[in-house]
Amino acid sequence: MTQQTPPSSFLRARLARDHHLGLPLTTGILAVLSACALFALVAAHALSPGALVDLDQHIADWLHARATAGLTQAILAYTHLHGTIGVLAMSAVLAFFLFRQRPRASAWLLTLAVTVPGGMLFNYWLKFQFQRVRPHFEQPILVLHSYSFPSGHTIGATLFYSVLAAWLASLPGNHARRPAIIIIATILTMMTALSRLYLGAHFFSDVLAAMLEGLAWFALWATIIFTVQRHQLARKSSN
Image (cartoon, rainbow, N blue to C red; front, side, top):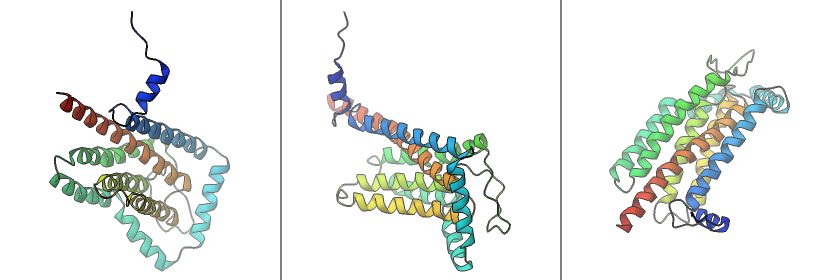
């Protein structure tokens, strides 16, 4: 007769810090599910008439009415840095540093390789599923003919800075710097999102959904890769 595990024992195992199926895995799963749920909520309200759509249009009109030539040039330079080529170039530089630190950084290198290009391709696929038209203005700053939801620039920044911040926060001696690392990564990501709003390339819900999608994608693959790594280390230590 099979002995069943008491619920309390199962819960304690899921919260154990020193087990590959413990707290890190539980936290990762909760992060993925939470981000996915919020993304679905934003998508549902952004693609049907309602308060979020009205807010999207209000923000777009407000920013467009306050655009200036000098600010536009600066924001164009910043947003182009976080386009597909820019994000992949920054990822290649980070990959070079992680490659030189093998095998200690092998899991981070794999996370970067799967997360950034994979997430950007997945976002491209999502655009064709939602097929949302971009904001329209009589005198637009940018004219783009691709779909709007979710924002490609924003998810690229979210994915890259998530990996970069997580790796930097994991380095020995960076424990006290973790809050600053997370804050800086968040600011850089939000600046990318704001640049897309200012240029009239996206609605507010486009960039919000992209950030949630990027966090879910990063959390998913980081959880998988580091759970496997912890399992392999546990097996080696037990042999």
